[in-house]
Amino acid sequence: MPRLMSRVRPPFPAPFFICMKHIKYKAVIFDLDGTLIDSMGIWRQVDKEFLGKRGIAVPGDLFARLPQGNSYIQTAQYFKDRFYLTDSVDEIMNEWTQSVCHHYENDIALKENAKECIIGLDGSRILIGLGTSNSYDLAIAALKQHQILLYFKTIITGCMELKGKPFPDIYLKAAADLAVNPTECIVIEDTLSGIMAAKNAGMYAIAIYDEDADEHRNEINHTADFSANNYKEIISHLQDLIC
Image 1 (cartoon, helix red, strand yellow):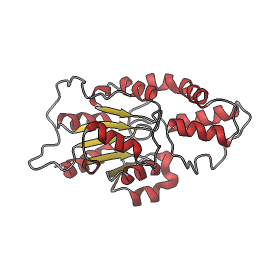
Image 2 (cartoon, helix red, strand yellow):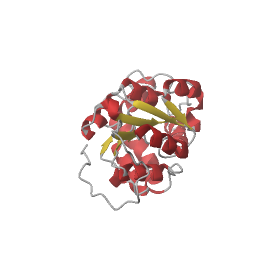
Image 3 (spheres, one colour):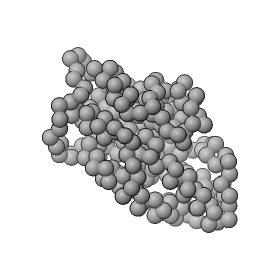
């Protein structure tokens, strides 16, 4: 997928990260689903409908173990293997994308104060990237819907030939694209696998609360470097952390 470093920077309000010393962290990499947008409930419905069409009930342990990682490609392969599907991996991914694309283009909500956080970081000359297990097309659709695509200097997605989270590959690729050291990156994530991917990449991991990840709440809070309930708390922490 193309790097997005050449996007024209629009005028911004005064930065809220005013640093008077050497900046330790040069980039912030966001996850997408459950982190920037409230989309996890939609995916639970997609799982139910996708398997239901094939006469399969959603098992309680559906995502208990994804040994190869949880990228879009790898999750499709996992469904194919686990449920002995005749569909190809591409057909599975295309069906998922078609099921949710309208929502990503039109009505999936951005988490409160997420846009303010992004604008503040960009105005403070902090590089911004996206590292998601979702598809490139859906990621672009969601960022365009909320008019924040132009702030992202690289977008790494789960349809690339990379190991998915909790492996560090997605975040390491984002850091390489941004030309920064992994130790100079902050990751904002909502899931345990995402937090583990950030830590495995040697990055500072911030966990943002999402109800869908409650099953692993204690592990998330234990593994992350900082846990927040919302973006107001993240903005306050970033002001201390970056400056």
